[in-house]
Length: 100
Image (cartoon, rainbow, N blue to C red; front, side):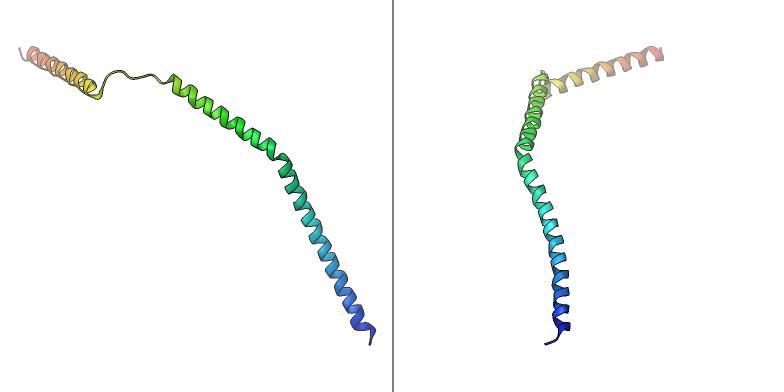
């Protein structure tokens, strides 16, 4: 047996220990963040519920403010046709007047 391989193995294990401690620290930080997220979850859920209630109320208010447009498409078409006829009669009357 010689000292060289044993010291080399000790150094390798120390380096591995340093690496593992760094990984453990990183893991602990992530774990802390997840614990915080879990603790904040009820508050986040309540905030989302409040936003949803507000949006629903807004939609309900907008729905209540809608005004019913009276009449049917057929009535609209008839009114448009009457206006076209009045326009056409006015054009004809103007043309007759100008041609006198």
